[in-house]
Image (cartoon, rainbow, N blue to C red; front, side):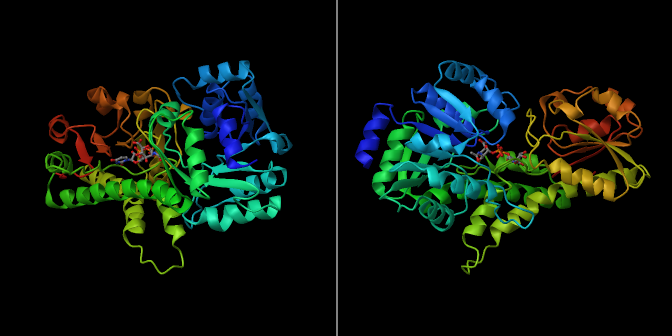
Length: 442
Ligand code: SAJ
């Protein structure tokens, strides 16, 4: 089928779409194409997820406005069906791949899920089908990893026997459907014509700009935009260190700096977690590995941000010393395990590094988080027998805490504030030994 044929089938919605990997990205994408009127086949390796999805139940935790209702609708209309078997893909004209692309402890991409999906897909890939990688990948991955696997496995050549593209997404937990609908996307095609066809396809679910590009540009846009954010946050964290050393208040400094036009200093904090920001800078760096590009800022920003939980430990040590106590043998109440405020998502949580360091130094830890199941419960009860409290996440319930009650519940009036939730002066006036990221210690 020529591209013109495929374009017609997309326009008439006869094109059969498959989505491999029904997670945070794949599931809403599959549901949205089904809602747009396409027959969509979801391929998912976890049988329990297949079962839930076919029953119209979303397996995604956390509050995702509209997703469950949409899923119920499109599965009831038989527009979306989930399976585990790749054989069903033989009839699909378009295949989207949304599998995980993590990096390991050495910051090297782990493409096992991606290569496994490609190896399973290639032999059953329909003649002239369009394959689109939506997962975030290092620049160069389309050319060096994806293309060879598909050509070898299908016995066909790109732009002759099949088309290929990269279309990264910009989802965020809690806004999956909204972000997919309203944020622009780049469509990186194996040829300009393929890129155009991709924009025709995505126009059915995306209301924002769809920019046809080559696939290296698509790989770069996604990894660069998140590396950019990581560097911006690291800069704010480094300024916080400067303010602590000089007796300043980084939050005041940031507020006044941002009054200057074209300045947008980010928020310092207890660390950078989540499924994107800690990972994507390393994918970008991997794209130029061995090419002699002297990367200094991107790895340094990662080191600064990964160091913030450890900096909180040193602030806590300093505060405990002020009440003649030490970390060794202390019991610490850690407030917040999610990576983001008012979320239950704990992926790459900065709190993990804090807990590990505290335990290495001989402290015991009680974790509390109003949004994460295993850490929910009465905060004041959790505070009993603790010598200090450390705030890691700016959850709204923590902003309105009865601080006098917390102080009475703790054995010592020590509080370390990783997210600028409290005012230093008023806490100190109320008898707290208070430390805050980017704030003077006296
Ligand atoms: N953080 C800071 N200071 C800041 C901003 C964030 O310390 O100024 C920390 C957060 O506490 C969190 C981590 O960084 O631990 C990540 O926060 P985030 O707001 O970037 O949230 P994410 O990880 O969900 O980022 C996603 C990304 N979107 C995609 O990759 C598609 C990111 O590019 C977006 O900018 C962000 O959502 C958003 O704000 O939409």
